[in-house]
Length: 416
Image (cartoon, rainbow, N blue to C red; front, side, top):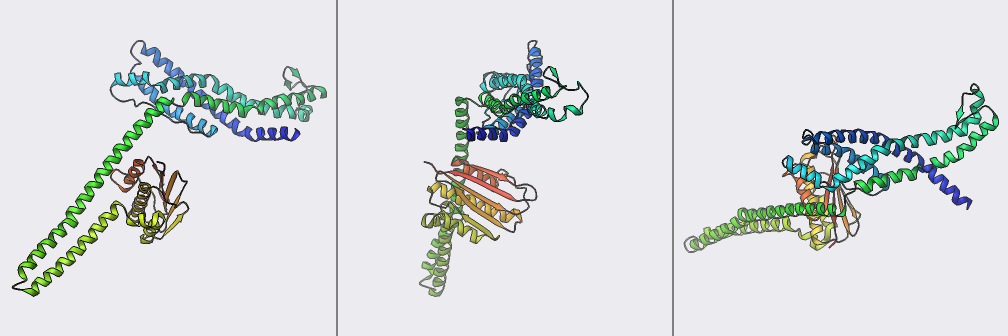
């Protein structure tokens, strides 16, 4: 029993500084929420006479950075993400006002704003005062004789004797016990923020449907562009060469009787052209689905890409087991595009490719030590990588500060 009590005490004491910091920051955001609530009240009053109506959508938009900050704080405290889902405030004033009123997220934001404006600063004051008061009560017997008589007034009595000094020491116990409850108070504040600021299931579902619609449209666009590229490659390359072979063989047939040597040269030329056409057809097939993927798997395909890289490349095949065909193809082309981008633009001296994740999720990370500053411009290779990931309901993250390094991370779900 003693060991259990001591463990709880030390655990609460260990969590106390973080809780005080969380509540103290909540005091600052509480003051901001108070000013914001007063500002909204003024705008609402002015809206009664029509003056403040145009400012309502902008006021809601200006509040969202504060609300987003509180979502991130509460999510970090609770260890679970809190999504930010709003209906877009677009269109003319009438449409934006209708969206503002109809969106339940705005009403939940207003509820949090009022609650936090009323409680944020008082809880922060309590979080700072309780630990300081407990320490002060415990130290009064050590310093009360050093101060002038009557200088210490403590909870309604003057500390002017040893009994009263030791009474202060006894008071430190309940005050300290209250201070040790601050982690629970901080968690309660974070839970209240999650309840009020998290979107309801209907909003999350609608947002998810919109995301899937957008990614499906992007996937269809990418698929159409890929088909057009294959058609162009076949039309301008292999098809033209095959047509040339037919013409050359026809000329050879005409020359066979009167100039056998010229006919033989023409046949050899046709053979060379046919070989070139076959090579181009193989390149087109590889661009659709590299045979090495089906024959030897993603690990061998990535190793082959790294071996062909002009920049030295290290490969970590930590999670290189077989995955669905579409996932392996997407991962292969993501790595190929990332290595090509790094070769063209990064001025790097070293590259690395790492495969990770689990059976349900394949992660691909490509890192270079180049100059950094990469941006996913529309039509560029990084934008193509993002589209490939989103087509499989995955995502790409890019970290490329000026001066490097550049890290491209892609997550590809492997579920059915």
